[in-house]
Length: 337
Ligand code: EPU
Image (cartoon, rainbow, N blue to C red; front, side, top):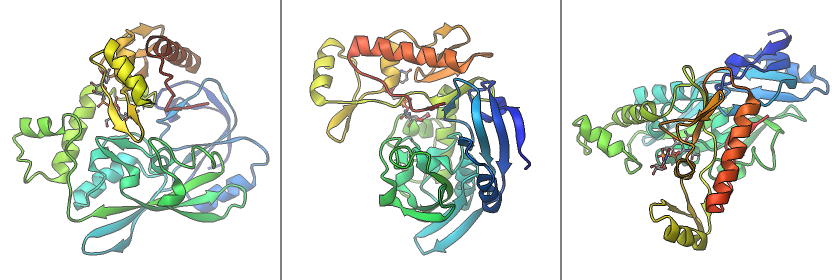
């Protein structure tokens, strides 16, 4: 696509924020991406996949490149596994559905996560007890300086909770081109998290014979029951990460707030940010054109016409109130631009 100027990004970010990009283009192939980058000069560059993890606080004074590089291929197949390579512009949920239909297991718990394949290792997406790192084999990324493709195995990606090397040390230095997942032909269903078993029981599905499709459908119904559809109400999923605090801090809070929940995480305790936000009275509260969602406090929403700055201000106010009440500093999960 030829370069465009002064383009609205409203339909390219799930918050639905009406900011503009100075320059804008879409790429459908690696060759197109390379020539776009080679001709770009010194403009700042921002890659957008599904735009589901972005908060624009102002117009983007540079080049926005929307990734439309698609394709799904089997790289290798054994009796137990399929090594499936997906190009980074593929829609994540469509990939999940494709695998569920083929009866290849491992990513069904991550059904309905918005965004693209390329973003999935970037922040080690996860839901309902499974993260990308559990099925990740390797990825190919374009080095933005040399314009050469480099291969990263799992170790090289340095995955953590909603983290990878591409969000830290190598931030802004690579474009993720393809991701290869190892999917199973013999399934080990993960049913422990939240309401999965309850939903399956409600549908009279026997846990002994449940399929990956049953699990995917259960997850879809759980997500639809509490997460707002960005097409109807702008949002970018969980706005903050769930914080991990020292055990001593958690024990102290437990005395003052006996209902506080926590899950052991490495050396500390992971506390649900949604609970903290709810306790500070933000859940379901509308402030101007924005607010914390009524069914899941961790999701900030655009009720229509919100500016990124308004959402950012709300996020800062939430951080401050939680710091004051619990002594915990929440960290945004979304990329603030
Ligand atoms: N909770 C509340 N009030 C709320 C929301 C949650 O008290 O308003 C409590 C719940 O009762 C529950 C706990 O917090 O005990 C956890 O809630 P939930 O299962 O809804 O998950 P979460 O920790 O809020 C995380 C991910 C989600 C993912 C779900 C399910 C993060 C930042 N978010 O949310 O991912 O879908 O688990 O696995 O880790 C995303 O990253 O955008 C996202 C939606």
